[in-house]
View: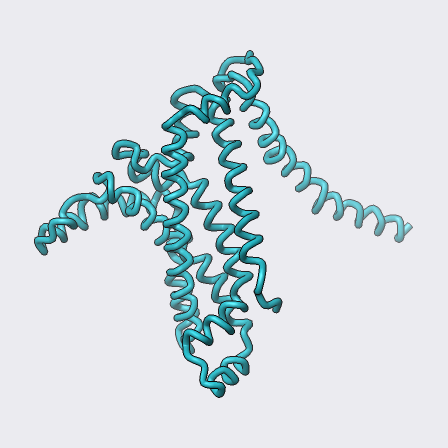
Length: 294
Protein backbone atom coordinates (compact mmCIF):
# COMPACT_ATOMS: atom_id res chain seq x y z
CA UNK A 1 0.00 0.00 0.00
CA UNK A 2 2.82 2.35 0.93
CA UNK A 3 4.62 1.56 -2.32
CA UNK A 4 1.47 2.24 -4.31
CA UNK A 5 1.12 5.66 -2.65
CA UNK A 6 4.71 6.50 -3.49
CA UNK A 7 4.11 5.59 -7.15
CA UNK A 8 0.99 7.78 -7.30
CA UNK A 9 2.84 10.61 -5.58
CA UNK A 10 5.75 10.42 -8.03
CA UNK A 11 3.30 10.45 -10.96
CA UNK A 12 1.57 13.53 -9.55
CA UNK A 13 4.95 15.29 -9.21
CA UNK A 14 5.84 14.31 -12.81
CA UNK A 15 2.47 15.60 -14.00
CA UNK A 16 2.81 18.88 -12.08
CA UNK A 17 6.33 19.70 -13.29
CA UNK A 18 6.17 18.47 -16.89
CA UNK A 19 2.71 17.96 -18.36
CA UNK A 20 1.08 21.15 -17.02
CA UNK A 21 3.95 23.51 -18.06
CA UNK A 22 4.13 21.74 -21.45
CA UNK A 23 0.38 22.19 -21.97
CA UNK A 24 0.54 25.87 -20.99
CA UNK A 25 3.54 26.47 -23.28
CA UNK A 26 1.80 24.70 -26.16
CA UNK A 27 -1.39 26.72 -25.71
CA UNK A 28 0.07 30.18 -25.10
CA UNK A 29 3.12 29.96 -27.43
CA UNK A 30 3.01 27.15 -30.00
CA UNK A 31 -0.72 27.56 -30.73
CA UNK A 32 -0.29 31.36 -31.02
CA UNK A 33 2.63 30.99 -33.43
CA UNK A 34 0.82 28.44 -35.61
CA UNK A 35 -2.33 30.59 -35.62
CA UNK A 36 -0.31 33.67 -36.57
CA UNK A 37 1.28 31.84 -39.50
CA UNK A 38 -2.18 30.69 -40.64
CA UNK A 39 -3.58 34.23 -40.51
CA UNK A 40 -0.62 35.53 -42.55
CA UNK A 41 -2.13 33.68 -45.54
CA UNK A 42 -5.52 35.31 -45.08
CA UNK A 43 -7.20 38.73 -45.41
CA UNK A 44 -8.39 38.92 -41.78
CA UNK A 45 -8.67 42.42 -40.29
CA UNK A 46 -8.52 41.24 -36.67
CA UNK A 47 -12.21 41.86 -35.91
CA UNK A 48 -14.44 40.27 -38.54
CA UNK A 49 -15.62 36.72 -37.82
CA UNK A 50 -15.06 35.73 -41.45
CA UNK A 51 -11.92 35.79 -43.52
CA UNK A 52 -10.57 34.22 -46.70
CA UNK A 53 -7.30 32.49 -47.43
CA UNK A 54 -5.43 34.44 -50.10
CA UNK A 55 -2.24 32.40 -50.31
CA UNK A 56 0.99 34.41 -50.63
CA UNK A 57 -0.73 37.70 -51.48
CA UNK A 58 0.36 39.39 -48.20
CA UNK A 59 3.98 38.35 -48.78
CA UNK A 60 3.81 39.58 -52.40
CA UNK A 61 2.62 42.99 -51.18
CA UNK A 62 5.44 43.09 -48.61
CA UNK A 63 8.08 42.53 -51.28
CA UNK A 64 6.74 45.53 -53.25
CA UNK A 65 6.22 47.79 -50.19
CA UNK A 66 9.02 50.43 -49.83
CA UNK A 67 7.91 51.21 -46.24
CA UNK A 68 8.56 47.58 -45.26
CA UNK A 69 12.09 47.61 -46.68
CA UNK A 70 12.77 50.99 -45.03
CA UNK A 71 11.66 49.74 -41.61
CA UNK A 72 13.67 46.55 -42.14
CA UNK A 73 16.77 48.62 -42.95
CA UNK A 74 16.16 50.80 -39.85
CA UNK A 75 15.83 47.65 -37.72
CA UNK A 76 19.06 46.22 -39.15
CA UNK A 77 20.99 49.44 -38.43
CA UNK A 78 19.44 49.55 -34.94
CA UNK A 79 20.52 45.94 -34.28
CA UNK A 80 24.09 46.50 -35.52
CA UNK A 81 24.51 49.62 -33.34
CA UNK A 82 22.98 47.80 -30.35
CA UNK A 83 25.23 44.74 -30.76
CA UNK A 84 28.41 46.81 -31.12
CA UNK A 85 27.52 49.14 -28.24
CA UNK A 86 26.41 46.48 -25.77
CA UNK A 87 29.19 43.97 -26.54
CA UNK A 88 32.01 46.53 -26.37
CA UNK A 89 30.69 48.29 -23.25
CA UNK A 90 29.80 45.02 -21.46
CA UNK A 91 33.23 43.56 -22.18
CA UNK A 92 35.01 46.67 -20.89
CA UNK A 93 32.86 46.68 -17.74
CA UNK A 94 33.36 42.93 -17.17
CA UNK A 95 37.16 43.19 -17.56
CA UNK A 96 37.20 46.16 -15.18
CA UNK A 97 35.02 44.41 -12.60
CA UNK A 98 37.08 41.22 -12.87
CA UNK A 99 40.25 43.14 -11.99
CA UNK A 100 38.68 44.64 -8.87
CA UNK A 101 39.48 43.04 -5.55
CA UNK A 102 37.14 45.14 -3.39
CA UNK A 103 33.57 46.48 -3.79
CA UNK A 104 32.96 44.21 -6.79
CA UNK A 105 29.54 43.17 -5.53
CA UNK A 106 28.45 46.76 -4.84
CA UNK A 107 29.55 47.97 -8.28
CA UNK A 108 27.85 45.00 -9.97
CA UNK A 109 24.61 45.94 -8.20
CA UNK A 110 25.06 49.56 -9.30
CA UNK A 111 25.38 48.57 -12.96
CA UNK A 112 22.41 46.21 -12.67
CA UNK A 113 19.95 48.91 -11.50
CA UNK A 114 18.87 50.00 -15.04
CA UNK A 115 18.07 46.37 -15.93
CA UNK A 116 15.45 46.27 -13.17
CA UNK A 117 13.59 49.37 -14.45
CA UNK A 118 10.87 48.96 -17.03
CA UNK A 119 11.66 50.01 -20.60
CA UNK A 120 8.80 52.53 -20.77
CA UNK A 121 9.91 54.17 -17.49
CA UNK A 122 13.46 54.45 -18.80
CA UNK A 123 12.18 55.88 -22.07
CA UNK A 124 10.16 58.54 -20.21
CA UNK A 125 13.20 59.50 -18.12
CA UNK A 126 15.46 59.81 -21.14
CA UNK A 127 12.77 61.66 -23.09
CA UNK A 128 12.99 64.45 -20.52
CA UNK A 129 16.79 64.23 -20.60
CA UNK A 130 16.84 64.71 -24.38
CA UNK A 131 14.01 67.26 -24.42
CA UNK A 132 14.96 69.51 -21.48
CA UNK A 133 18.14 68.64 -19.57
CA UNK A 134 20.68 68.23 -22.39
CA UNK A 135 19.43 71.26 -24.43
CA UNK A 136 19.57 73.36 -21.23
CA UNK A 137 23.18 72.27 -20.61
CA UNK A 138 23.97 72.99 -24.27
CA UNK A 139 22.56 76.51 -24.07
CA UNK A 140 24.29 77.12 -20.73
CA UNK A 141 27.67 76.04 -22.11
CA UNK A 142 26.93 77.53 -25.58
CA UNK A 143 27.36 74.20 -27.39
CA UNK A 144 25.17 74.41 -30.56
CA UNK A 145 24.93 70.65 -31.30
CA UNK A 146 23.81 69.96 -27.71
CA UNK A 147 21.21 72.76 -27.60
CA UNK A 148 18.61 70.93 -29.73
CA UNK A 149 16.86 67.67 -28.84
CA UNK A 150 18.53 64.64 -30.41
CA UNK A 151 15.12 62.98 -30.82
CA UNK A 152 13.87 65.73 -33.15
CA UNK A 153 16.69 65.37 -35.66
CA UNK A 154 16.48 62.76 -38.42
CA UNK A 155 20.23 62.05 -38.22
CA UNK A 156 20.50 61.73 -34.43
CA UNK A 157 17.12 60.25 -33.44
CA UNK A 158 18.01 56.60 -34.12
CA UNK A 159 21.46 56.71 -32.39
CA UNK A 160 19.79 58.43 -29.41
CA UNK A 161 17.18 55.68 -29.10
CA UNK A 162 19.87 52.99 -29.42
CA UNK A 163 21.94 54.75 -26.73
CA UNK A 164 19.04 54.50 -24.26
CA UNK A 165 18.62 50.80 -25.10
CA UNK A 166 22.35 50.17 -24.61
CA UNK A 167 22.27 51.97 -21.24
CA UNK A 168 19.52 49.65 -20.04
CA UNK A 169 20.64 46.42 -21.69
CA UNK A 170 24.33 46.31 -20.82
CA UNK A 171 23.92 44.85 -17.31
CA UNK A 172 23.06 41.24 -18.14
CA UNK A 173 25.76 40.76 -20.83
CA UNK A 174 28.28 42.23 -18.36
CA UNK A 175 27.38 39.59 -15.77
CA UNK A 176 27.56 36.83 -18.41
CA UNK A 177 31.01 38.02 -19.52
CA UNK A 178 32.11 38.26 -15.89
CA UNK A 179 31.05 34.66 -15.22
CA UNK A 180 33.17 33.59 -18.21
CA UNK A 181 36.19 35.56 -17.01
CA UNK A 182 36.06 34.09 -13.51
CA UNK A 183 36.61 30.51 -14.71
CA UNK A 184 40.01 31.32 -16.26
CA UNK A 185 42.75 29.82 -14.02
CA UNK A 186 45.12 32.40 -12.55
CA UNK A 187 48.04 30.04 -13.31
CA UNK A 188 47.56 30.59 -17.04
CA UNK A 189 47.89 34.37 -16.63
CA UNK A 190 51.01 33.84 -14.49
CA UNK A 191 52.52 31.59 -17.19
CA UNK A 192 51.72 34.17 -19.86
CA UNK A 193 53.42 36.90 -17.78
CA UNK A 194 56.53 34.72 -17.39
CA UNK A 195 56.58 34.20 -21.17
CA UNK A 196 56.52 37.98 -21.65
CA UNK A 197 53.07 38.19 -23.27
CA UNK A 198 51.66 41.67 -23.79
CA UNK A 199 48.21 42.74 -22.56
CA UNK A 200 46.77 42.33 -26.07
CA UNK A 201 48.36 38.88 -26.50
CA UNK A 202 46.93 37.72 -23.16
CA UNK A 203 43.47 38.88 -24.23
CA UNK A 204 43.73 37.45 -27.77
CA UNK A 205 45.18 34.03 -26.96
CA UNK A 206 44.03 33.41 -23.37
CA UNK A 207 41.01 35.50 -22.33
CA UNK A 208 39.08 35.54 -25.60
CA UNK A 209 38.99 31.73 -26.17
CA UNK A 210 37.60 31.28 -22.65
CA UNK A 211 34.86 33.91 -23.01
CA UNK A 212 33.91 32.94 -26.58
CA UNK A 213 30.95 30.78 -25.39
CA UNK A 214 29.65 33.78 -23.43
CA UNK A 215 30.08 35.94 -26.54
CA UNK A 216 27.83 33.47 -28.38
CA UNK A 217 25.15 33.67 -25.69
CA UNK A 218 25.29 37.45 -25.53
CA UNK A 219 25.14 37.85 -29.32
CA UNK A 220 22.05 35.64 -29.59
CA UNK A 221 20.27 37.62 -26.85
CA UNK A 222 21.25 41.05 -28.21
CA UNK A 223 20.48 40.23 -31.86
CA UNK A 224 17.04 39.02 -30.83
CA UNK A 225 16.51 42.14 -28.70
CA UNK A 226 17.59 44.38 -31.58
CA UNK A 227 15.33 42.83 -34.22
CA UNK A 228 12.31 42.67 -31.89
CA UNK A 229 12.75 46.16 -30.40
CA UNK A 230 9.60 48.21 -30.09
CA UNK A 231 9.18 49.90 -26.69
CA UNK A 232 12.10 52.37 -26.80
CA UNK A 233 11.39 53.65 -30.31
CA UNK A 234 7.66 53.87 -29.71
CA UNK A 235 7.91 55.58 -26.30
CA UNK A 236 10.66 58.04 -27.29
CA UNK A 237 9.76 59.00 -30.86
CA UNK A 238 6.70 57.01 -31.99
CA UNK A 239 8.73 56.05 -35.07
CA UNK A 240 9.55 59.66 -36.06
CA UNK A 241 10.82 62.07 -37.07
CA UNK A 242 9.88 61.34 -40.70
CA UNK A 243 9.90 57.59 -39.88
CA UNK A 244 13.62 57.75 -39.04
CA UNK A 245 13.14 55.40 -36.06
CA UNK A 246 10.27 53.29 -37.42
CA UNK A 247 11.61 49.81 -36.74
CA UNK A 248 9.76 46.71 -37.95
CA UNK A 249 8.12 46.25 -34.52
CA UNK A 250 6.37 49.62 -34.83
CA UNK A 251 5.26 48.80 -38.38
CA UNK A 252 3.76 45.49 -37.20
CA UNK A 253 1.96 47.29 -34.35
CA UNK A 254 0.58 50.01 -36.61
CA UNK A 255 -0.64 47.54 -39.25
CA UNK A 256 -2.27 45.28 -36.64
CA UNK A 257 -3.96 47.79 -34.32
CA UNK A 258 -4.21 51.07 -36.24
CA UNK A 259 -4.53 50.13 -39.91
CA UNK A 260 -6.54 46.97 -39.04
CA UNK A 261 -4.39 44.84 -41.36
CA UNK A 262 -3.97 41.98 -38.93
CA UNK A 263 -3.06 39.37 -41.55
CA UNK A 264 -0.44 41.70 -43.06
CA UNK A 265 1.05 42.28 -39.60
CA UNK A 266 1.29 38.51 -39.15
CA UNK A 267 3.10 38.20 -42.49
CA UNK A 268 5.59 40.88 -41.39
CA UNK A 269 6.10 39.05 -38.08
CA UNK A 270 6.74 35.76 -39.92
CA UNK A 271 9.37 37.42 -42.13
CA UNK A 272 10.98 38.90 -39.02
CA UNK A 273 11.00 35.46 -37.35
CA UNK A 274 12.80 33.94 -40.36
CA UNK A 275 15.39 36.76 -40.40
CA UNK A 276 16.14 36.32 -36.67
CA UNK A 277 16.45 32.54 -37.09
CA UNK A 278 18.87 32.91 -40.04
CA UNK A 279 21.01 35.50 -38.24
CA UNK A 280 21.11 33.39 -35.06
CA UNK A 281 22.15 30.21 -36.89
CA UNK A 282 24.89 32.02 -38.86
CA UNK A 283 26.16 33.76 -35.72
CA UNK A 284 26.22 30.51 -33.68
CA UNK A 285 28.07 28.71 -36.50
CA UNK A 286 30.70 31.47 -36.66
CA UNK A 287 31.28 31.90 -32.91
CA UNK A 288 31.04 28.24 -31.84
CA UNK A 289 34.53 27.50 -33.19
CA UNK A 290 37.68 27.95 -31.21
CA UNK A 291 36.27 28.36 -27.72
CA UNK A 292 37.56 26.64 -24.60
CA UNK A 293 35.25 24.14 -22.91
CA UNK A 294 35.30 24.75 -19.15
